[in-house]
Every structure is written in structure tokens, then in C-alpha cells.
Length: 210
Image 1 (cartoon, rainbow, N blue to C red):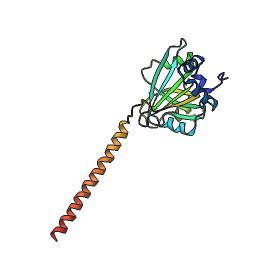
Image 2: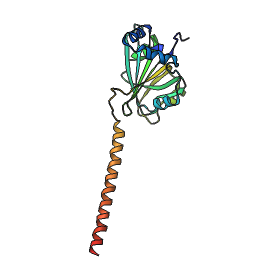
Image 3: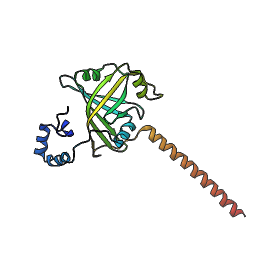
Image 4: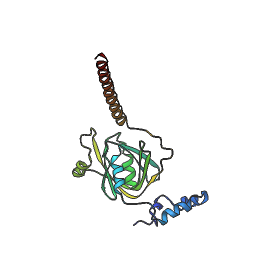
């Protein structure tokens, strides 16, 4: 059972709230709490954002509280929203240190950080996570079709609260594939314009000769 009064209490501990009060932001966040605090369910807009990402950072901590951040990536859609509280993804084989899995065995609390540089948007998701091994049916559901990676296991993340951040200080960056596509479209447009100019010049020359 969640002992928090507000969903944001997962992050706003009494110590954090005391600092907010001392630095002048507690009143504003108290108003957020009065309006219902952060959301816990995955909304359609959040689901669309999650499933559009090609990169995510998963934070865990071991039994001693030592934090660890692991990056995971894949094609858009590798992160899948399974229901209003659950996100699942295939954990691809890597350097086989298994720090994240060991941490989750000791401490299931986890955190997802998603950032979209192109649109300068970031989402923070608090919850818990667990590793699922030897579930062929779920693996088939979560493994991106045609993706050249070896699946190791599955990670299921249960959401307890989420919040979005303002775009302040997020540098705007674009995916290489998106830039290449935009440049290719530009080059096609330039080629068409050059052909159109040549055609118009030819028509103009023919009119002068007449």
C-alpha cells in the first residue's frame, strides 16, 4: 500500500519539502498537491511519448543505496506501454555485468528518465521494476521486429508517479536519420527547382527567337 499522501511524495520527502520552504518554492508545489499532485496513470499522450523514444535511462540502487544509471536504446517502439501502469521492454545482451538486475533483486525501486532533444521535452517516471526471464510469449510481444540485437531478458516497470519538465536548458538536437531525411528532401527540392529554371529558360529562349 502506498503510504504517500500525494503521488509527488515519492520525490518530495519531508527533507525536500523543508528545503523548498526555505528556498521559497513550497507554496507553489503545495498548490500542485491541492490540485491532485502528479499523475500515476499513463495517459494516451504519455504513452505516445514513451513509444516514440529510441533511448531511455533506467536508474536503480542496490541494497546499500548506491545508485546506478543504465542506458537502454532501440528503435522507436522498443518501449511498450502494456497498461495504464506498466511499461515493458526487452533488455538486450550487453557487457553482461548485470548490475541493474542485481540492484532490482535487492531493491525494486526504480526510475525512468526520458528526454526528447528535438522537441526539448523530458519526462520523469518513478516506480518499481522487475526482471522477467524465460517468458517466450512476452518476449515475442516486446522484441522489436527486425532489430539486430540479442534479447537477454525483459524488464517490466510499474509506474507510481510521473512528471514532465519545462524545456529550460535542454539543448535542441536531432536524430541523424531525421537530419539525413530532411537533407534528402531538400536536395530533391533543389533538383526540381533547377529543372524548372532550365525549362523556363528554354521556353524564354524559344519565345525570343520567334
